[in-house]
Image 1 (cartoon, one colour):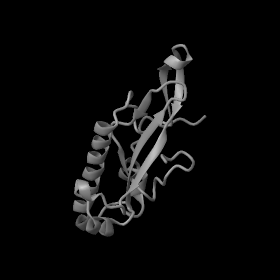
Image 2 (image 1 turned 30 degrees about the vertical axis):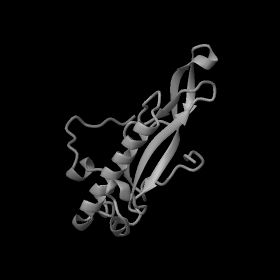
Image 3 (image 1 turned 120 degrees about the horizontal axis):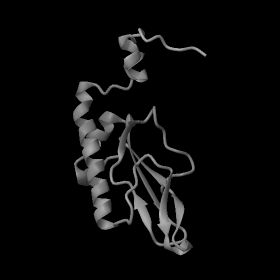
Length: 149
């Protein structure tokens, strides 16, 4: 069994995230940052509007694939509901929330916004993430088979 020496000091490159050690392919250039901020703000506003129009029972984190809840339909037992993924790419314009066609054309499909949503088969409870995640499309493609339809 190998042990790390107590005198070991990591080099500065060990402390940086892995994607920053090689090429900086996933860093947004300065001229695209305003469009990226508008995309993020439009997606957050879209999610807030969705919560207002269609309220849910639970707000799980945006990272979960399964969310456990106390199900009335199964005699108050802990039951998992499968969370489906909402994946919005930055090449889609959302004009009603300030992200227009020119911003979508500039960014292309570099970024994506992910939310999770699900419902229980046994009771009428629903769940949707309160906050979404902004990711690079190359690093995090959509999850196959578990998309919101």
